[in-house]
Image 1: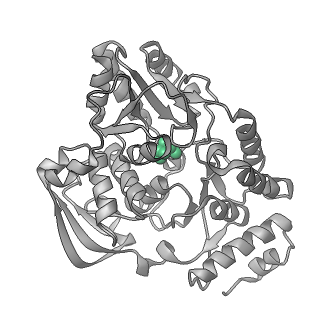
Image 2 (image 1 turned 30 degrees about the vertical axis):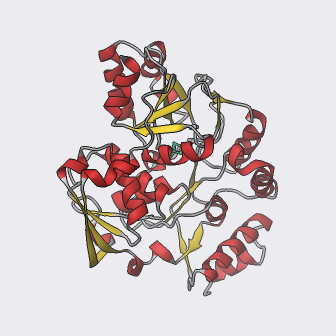
Image 3 (image 1 turned 135 degrees about the vertical axis):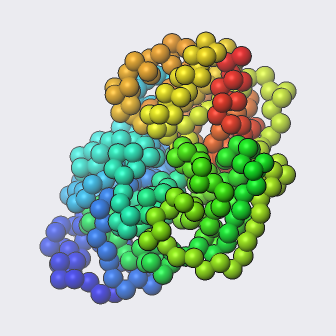
Length: 389
Ligand code: F3S
C-alpha cells in the first residue's frame, strides 16, 4: 500500500505508540480489502462501546489506547453505551454502570464528543463526497444514502483507529466505482402503508446488491432513518440509492434486476402475534429520535392524555435531557419512560413485560434475538395509541 511520508512516520512510531498501532490496524484491514492508499477522514463515529456487548476485553482494548496516548485527530462522536446516565428510565438496568463509566471517561479524555447516540449526523451533518469512518450500521447507511457521504460499515476498533490517525483505508464505498445501484426496488402504494421497518427488513433480507428505491421520495427523513436502519439490520447494506433523495453525484446506476414489493410480501416481517400478551412495552427511538420526532410523540401522548396500558419507552441522545428539558419532563409526567444515551438493544433491561410493540424494524430484529421476547411492528402512531388507550 502506498503511504505518504507523514503516514510512514506515524507507522514508525514518531507520533507515539497509539497512533502507530492504530495505523497498523487500518493498513492491515485495508490490505485485506485491496486498498492501494489511505484517505483522510472528516469525522469518526465509534460504535462497539457498550460494556454489555464488548465486555472486559473490549474495555481493555479501548482503555489501552487511551492510557498509551491515543487522542482524536478528527471530530469524533460516540455511539450509545449500556447506561442511562439521565437516571430517568426504570426499564434500563444500569448494572454495568462502573465499567461503562470507565469506558466513557477514557473515550471523553481521548477527545471524543460524549453524544452517546446512533444519530451522529444530527450533531455534524456530513457533506456529499466527504470521507468518514463510522461504525453503527444505521448511521452508516444514512450517511451514504441521505447525505451522499463516503463511509464503509466499520467495526468499532477501526473507527477508533481512524479517529486516532485521521485516516482510513480507501476501499469499498470510499471508491466511486463501488457506489453503483443495481436492483430497482419498486414499492407499491399498499406496501408503503405498512410499518416502514417491515419494508426495510424485507429489502435487507431479499436484495443483495445495492438497491435503487423507487416510490419513496415522499417519505420524511424520520421514516427514511427507520427504513434504512432496518435494511442494514437484516442485510449487509451500507448504501441505498433513494431516487429523488440521494445526491446524484455520489453514485451511478447499472440496473441488472427489478423487484416489486407488495403489501403481502411484508406480512412475515411484521413480527409476532402479541394479542394474548399481558404486559406490552411500546418502544420508539431506534435509531435515536430527532427532536421533531420527540415533539411529535409528545403531541400524540397529549392527545390521549397519558400512558395507560403497559409501558412506553423512548430513547434519545444523552444531551437532549438538558436541551429539551421541559419536553422531556412533560413526557415523563405523562407516564413515558425515557432512556438517554442508550437503548434496549445495547443495554441490560428489566423484563417487566412479555412483548414489545415498536415502529423500529431494527429493534424488532435484535430484541427478539437478544432478549427472546415477542416483538410486533406497528406504525409509530399505533404504538402510542395502543399504550395510551
Ligand atoms: Fe441506536 Fe440502539 Fe437502535 S444504538 S440504532 S437505538 S439498536
